[in-house]
Length: 135
Length: 135
DNA sequence: CTGAATCCGCCGTGATACTG
DNA sequence: CAGTATCACGGCGGATTCAG
Image (tube, rainbow over all chains, first blue to last red; front, side, top):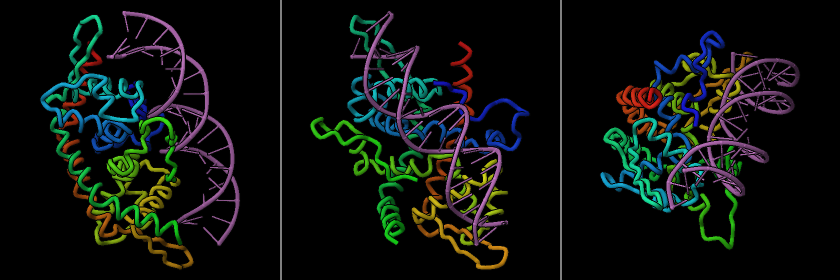
C-alpha cells in the first residue's frame, strides 16, 4: 500500500489542489486512513479486545466480508501509522498477533462518537434518501 | 451516486458478503458519505455559518482546491441525504443558497471530535510513518 | 496459516465544454 | 454564475496465485 497517499508531494505541479490542506487540515489525512472500507471496523474490533491481541484469522472472522488481501493491507497501513502493534510468533504454523497501540486506542473515542451518530441518525438519512428518490 | 450494493448476494454461501453490514453497521454507510475528500470540510464550513446560508461561489472559496464538479456533486449528495438545505433564488444571475439542516448540524459534533483527534494526534502518526519509512 | 504480488473492474476525481 | 454531461485517468478493492 503506498503510504504516500493521493495528493502528490510534488510542488509546482498544481498549486491549487488539496496540497494546501495537509498543514491546515489534518482531518484530511485522518480520513485518508479511516475513510476506507475497513479501518474503522478493525479499530473497533481491536479496541474491544484492548489491551489483548487478535490473530489474523480471528480478525477475519470478526470482520465478515473482508478479503484476505484487504485485511493484510489494512493492518499493514495501521501498523505503518503506529496505530497497531504487530507481534510475530515464529512457529511452524506462523501466527501473527495484532493489538492496538496506546495511540490507536485514543482513536476509538472519536470513532465511537461517529458510530453513535450513525446509529442514531442514519435512519433519518435513509428516510431523507427515500423521500428524495420518491419525488 | 450511491445505492449500488456492489457486493454480490450469494445465496448458497453463508453471509460472508458486506451486505450484513448495512443493518449491523450504519457506520459503514456514514463513512460512504463523510469518507470522501470534501464532505467533512463542507459540513464544517456550513456549520460555522449555521444557521446562515452560503452561496456556491462562497463555498468554493471556503474549500480551496475543490473543483466545480465536485462541489456540485458533493452538495447534491448532502442534499439528497437531508443534511443540507438548498434554496434557489430565481434571479437573472441565478443564485443558490446552501445551509445545514438540523440533522446536518448534529453531524458537526462527531465531526469536530474527529478533527480534534486529527489535529492532536496526526503529528504522532506522521512521526510513526517517518520511523517506519526510515528503517 | 500468514502475507505478498499480480490482474482487473469499478468508482472517485478533475478538465473541459455546454445549457440556462 | 449555477449546474450538468462527457471523457480520461488513477487508485481502491476483490479474486486469484505464489511464497514462506
